[in-house]
Length: 73
Image (cartoon, rainbow, N blue to C red; front, side, top):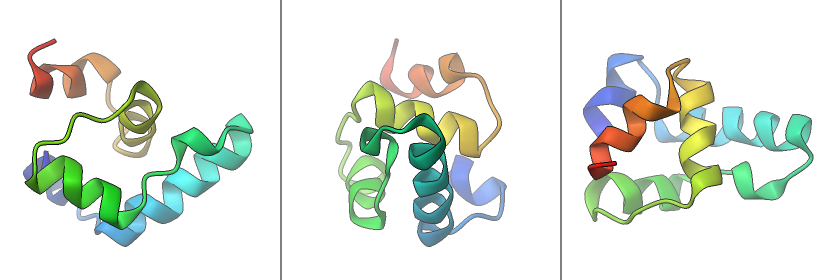
């Protein structure tokens, strides 16, 4: 997943900032993907909740299904 993010030229802080904008527009804080949470997801293999997976799909402008494949779903 890290390589996928980096292919868009985005840093963890970029994802954090953009996910905060998504959380504001959706009026749901669950969409926020902090740098520490993203690090856990990318490097430690933590499985994100649906909101924290949907936010990056919006940030990366890709279908949610593409990110679900990272988790064998």
